[in-house]
Length: 92
Image 1: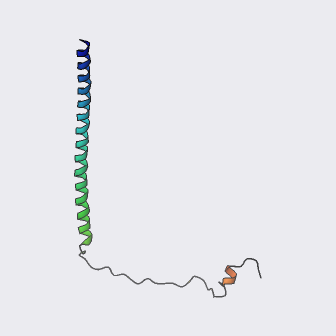
Image 2: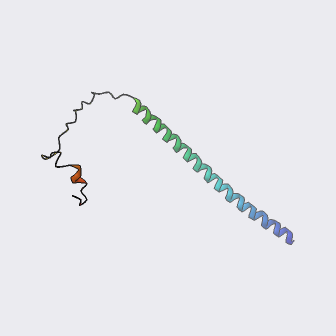
Image 3: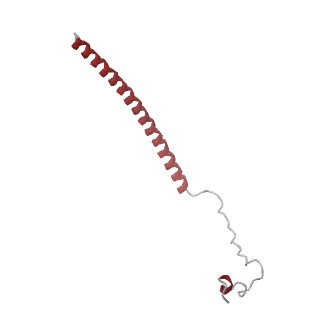
């Protein structure tokens, strides 16, 4: 009689664990399917963006003006910025 109760208890515990594992497996499978669909969506977006980047743009070409280089501000000479003045360490 006692062995029958122990056997039923073990069967019940195993059944609970099996149903819990089945639920976790179904949840994991659903999550994997969701992630797979999201990956496919992202792949299609990336391929669409790559094809858009490769297509030449229709429109007038941009006319760029040459960069105007201005001289240094102020009226400095090469003697004003001599290396000796820049690296003067107190020696004369």
